[in-house]
Image 1 (cartoon, one colour):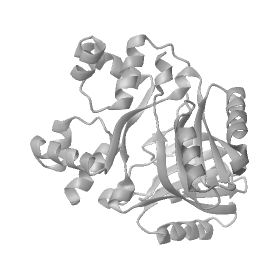
Image 2: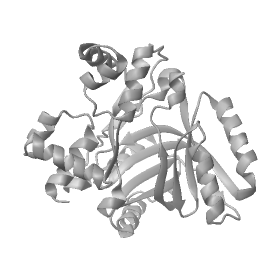
Image 3: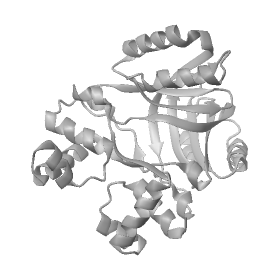
Image 4: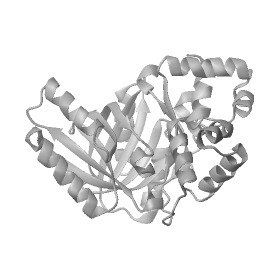
Length: 324
């Protein structure tokens, strides 16, 4: 890994579908060399996946997250639990944790009643091995560029790369669903390649993708980076707040976002109200961030905890069942 590799990762993280000529110009290398570098990053496991991130609210679905704590779980039983969640069609993401929780699981549900039934089913199947669980609804996501990759300083303005947007229900055509499925599998496919698979011209694919982007059904194009391969770790600071006023909240978000290793700020409805996700080389950076937050906003913070995300086991941006 050298500075060119990190530049490639940074640009692809901001737009995984960036055309090769444009990316070539940005990083200052030939398309042939760039292709070789990207392939090497994939072969070495640094890049796991290129995907379109789909706005689930177009079909009135929502993401619900649940934190779990194990009980009487050995390695064999943990493997069984992991396989259970991998094979659960309503689980779109989950990861193992260190800290006050052992698992974080994200469910895709039509509504609160559907989520309640899913939660009951999981507790019925796994309840003997779970000492506690904590459901929460992620109300708003603020996603920031991985500026630490190129050691880029942030201005201090609160300018997330993406903010959660709710949209009206949309009835998609079979072609639209096919496009979303292909882009979720590999968003670096060309319009021509997708058109060949779906039996239409690349002009049709280009026009439909533009429309899906305009309607915010496609949120953005995401590169899944295995940060452990570049010697980074992912942590979360979970915060219980003392009902900050709007002005205080704005200042708080602005303060946190100036750290170039902060990748998400998530507003949640549940036991705690906020999560700050960061990717760092050393846990000391997280401890420093938390200390800075407590010194700057002592009246806002009621309680806090730190969680490390050890490993992601599943990530699906567009479940196949939607095609049926």
